[in-house]
Length: 264
Image (cartoon, rainbow, N blue to C red; front, side):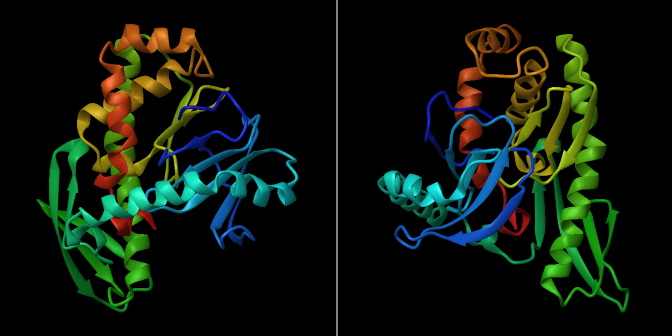
């Protein structure tokens, strides 16, 4: 979401468009693992920590990646301090948060809780079926990775079914039209808006409380007027949602609602 105003600005646990290269690269600075994402909108190097403490380095297109270790070295204290804070926060989460496969799924955005039932079959792919408040997962359910992929597809479908209509309704209420909306599974961003007014929503928003999801809608819709975080942009946000500052702060901590299996 919020872009930096100066070089090498660090941002904690922020949900960006596409990752052009997310292959982990081992740095020579403190053995810190990170991945790199090129962004056409970036003017400087930005460091972001993902939900579970992974480091993302966002660079302008064509940036000399040989300079990245020096940037990381410069921000080493911030990285270590922030990763320690995240590790401490993770310890406070319930054990269910870290299940490799869920026994239940709580989608706060739509006020639904699903019990999950796993049924083994010889089907090549995972099939998900809703039966009331139960999600039935059928296929090679002894393969956790395959199951998680199937659950991610279900989340994406659920987001198309529920989040996109919510965005459309908010757009009409605020009189802020957009061209197109899509659902993706971004690693570090809850949503984005392109110069062509295409709004992308992260299906992980389903795990967040409704008020924070609504704020994300407002945030991205205001980008259809101002594709930046200028004073005029925030003035527009304030007119559309006076309580935005509290929700902006809450959204930065919302990663803790997303279970580990949904992050991978």
